[in-house]
Length: 202
Image (tube, rainbow, N blue to C red; front, top):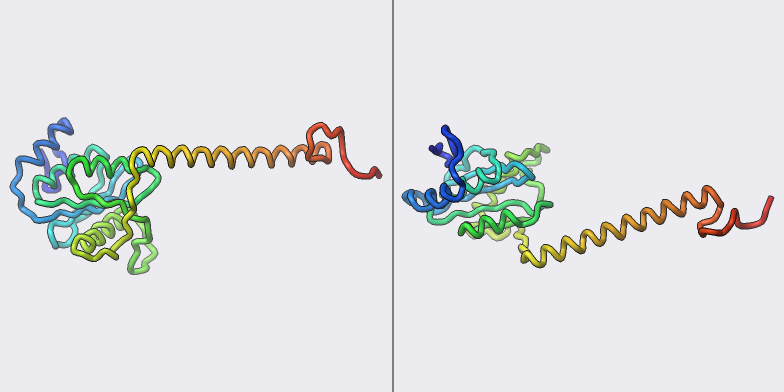
């Protein structure tokens, strides 16, 4: 059983794949477009939904399976489903999952979404702002936000290796610097095996 937002309710969560197939094929297309602004985190996703040009609905919180189930539900309700989320430390796996479902997803450059300068930042506010910007983008305003080019899986692997190599090099340099500092304190020299302090004696 699903509530009016397409989230599981009542007697447990059905098999995700079965539910997604069912949701995408059994509902009348009631809307032209549904837009979802997603504020993504490691465990939870905050989602704001807009039906056609209506005011975005209250933000919902869900895990990854719940999100994919929810997106599939929207595909059964609208001819087009558009989603977006900010690029972050979690890579592009969510993007690939959404695209594989047939959704038009955008990964966008992170920014401060506090347009009114209230100095308040929450996950729900970010999800709502992303949904509103997505609406502008879909309507033709390409300046609504900056879209990030999603790398291929091979490119992403190469970037990860490059980042790890850079981290190892920086860590080695840090340890070398620490070692030289300790050596100077103990012997007065930064050269191993110098046999003691250098320079003229007292």
